[in-house]
Length: 281
Image (cartoon, rainbow, N blue to C red):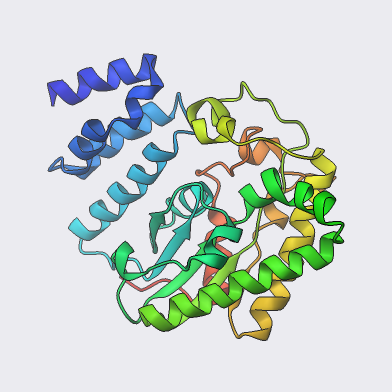
């Protein structure tokens, strides 16, 4: 107890400590998940955007629910850091964070469900593509001379085909692709979202905010159409999180690239519409 509290005090001053594996697993394995949750929530009240702590918070919530005899998760959320912020706070979702992987990469190298500990009969929601829109696709459009719509159709078709392979090999029974959030209109690189998650600073931002917003819109449309053709669901979460101009609303994200993990009720409602209600207690 004392060592966890001491480490929490240090981490509150130096947020890099919150990425420590030792701290993560000490809290995860703590016998009282409610107390471990209290420590995580205290830290996140000061540092909202540490992805590893948000993911840990989700695991502790599910551990607490299991200890109370509540139903386990019935949806496997897979993807980049947006899988963590979008789904960790939703009790019915078990999150598998696969790092800052791009949609283009997954189109070439399919996700291995067994390697993630996901068995046959699973229902999946997959979110990728924000990194593609932020870092690569505007540049690809310029280099290839390909119109944005055609480029997005190519990326979407490859990704959906890869997801079909993932489902067939892993025995998943249902899947949905989560829409890509548009960028914020103004990127504050000193914002806690960027400082806490070093990967946001490691990747370049290519193209203007409007170019990247338009690319996200085009890729979302291509994903929805490609998914529909193949009988895969499409989870559209954009509308609740954008401002009047179609950019990610700073009031819903704090000005960063991710939604605020505390404001995901609209996502839970859309999951229920797509997958049905969560398991009853």
